[in-house]
Length: 261
Image 1 (cartoon, rainbow, N blue to C red):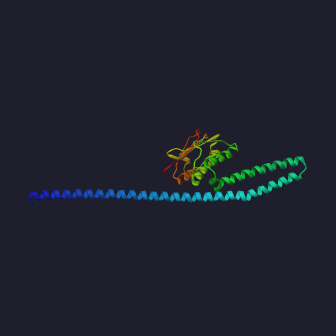
Image 2 (image 1 turned 180 degrees about the vertical axis):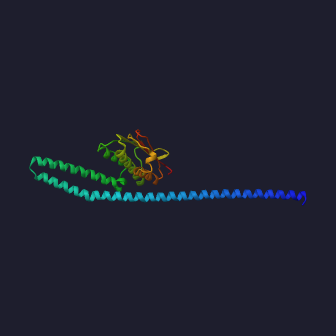
Image 3 (image 1 turned 135 degrees about the vertical axis):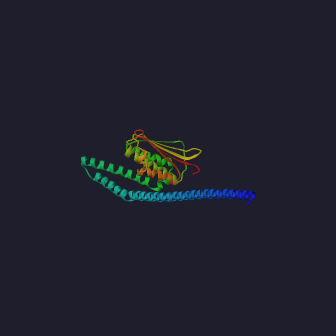
């Protein structure tokens, strides 16, 4: 074999080797790309499945709450009404002043309980949410909680009217209820501040803050049922959910929904 032939052989071998390496690199790159696309598809499918599960859970919760609301109104409410009428009859028939005074006190307690029961029943049913604006719904919840004098709640907003779907109103109201219950039960707070705003970029932004004892979010986020419920409700409508808390510095939850979501 002459020098020319040897040189040609070496050149061809090098070209073949370079092409072989390039082919392997292209294959590896395509493999990684396909693997990434496959993992992304799995992640998207898992996220869709998770949202479907969350939606089902929330539907079951909502159906249960509606059933409880109807039961409170139709069954227990009717019984309290009968008891109230019975005490009124006793008050009318009884002529002993001391006994009449006691019966009057019992009657007042029953009537107040009946009003509270009706208010709770309305809160639990869809009809109340469908018929009222979000500001009215939140203010009713605030007034109802403030009446128990467990914690002072202040509600502010930067709009006169905000047209929201039933789903969004329901999510906002249930998150607020969950936060209030958690704060009163666990945080030893004196004040809760609720602010609902809207802007050019945001459909709405809900910010809820308390001045309680706070907690370690890294230890509680995976275990707290109330926090999990709030996160799940926000996730179901693709809203951003953040929570900040420090010991002795209170807790703040912020849920934001962009207009393109």
